[in-house]
Length: 364
Image (cartoon, rainbow, N blue to C red):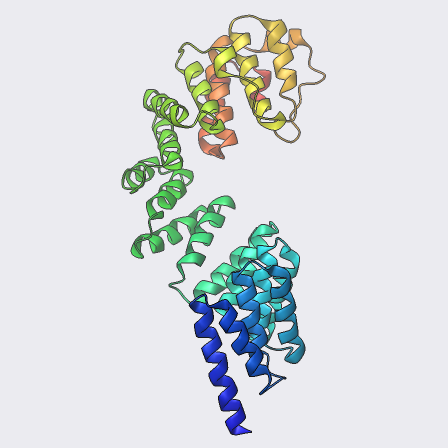
């Protein structure tokens, strides 16, 4: 029996080597040969599953991994590999189920925690995803894939202090996106000077870095530089909504030549268009075109949950808005949408100082 097992394991090893060499036909042949020595071992079925997975034959891969688990229900690689196949095929619920099974069997499985984090992320269970990636790093602090995922999720979930700390870990590890993460986090922590320094040191000046740099300039009251930054982004990427919206707000704030037809086109989808309609209303109000201003303000209903001017007469809007407050009101709204609430508050305060009776500035 010992000699049979030894021979079987030798065949398993040979099959795995052949798989890594992409000699799939020979590897499958060796797997089948090994089964004649031990029909109850999950290894050859697991190797076959990996071969089919490599070849994108996901149905056969799933069947092979399931057979391995029938032979040995607590076979961890069977669960982690099924989790990977289901993730690849888009069945994230099934993927999470098998990664959790692997963790129940072996709580210290780094790959299972990482895989479960990915599945939760696709299921939009972001807080649970973060916990799994944090556990992955607890098991292996050098797992760069988990570090990268955490950086993205911390920023997405507005955990900016955590994003700053993970950015420092990325920097120590020599990861390319470290300065971008540090700059992004610093920006939202109200430290635009720090953010500017980090972003200047980012090795690759991509669209995201340039866009964040534009907001650094805005928060540092360098609005002319910010406008140039947004215009340059739009030259390279005309469909960048954030830069498009920011450019319009900056042009109006700086009293530049703002064109409703060119700078405030409603071509971005219903929800994104609403903010542009509001800015259209602001621009038209500044020109005493109250009929069109009123129409556009009403088209902005719902741009954030609960916002609506239904029930407010046009004459009321006209009587309660003043031209001098409008640039601050409009720029404040941009900051509000970008979650820079402290700066938004200051802009709304400035608008109210200029017009204490403002119906819209007081609302925001």
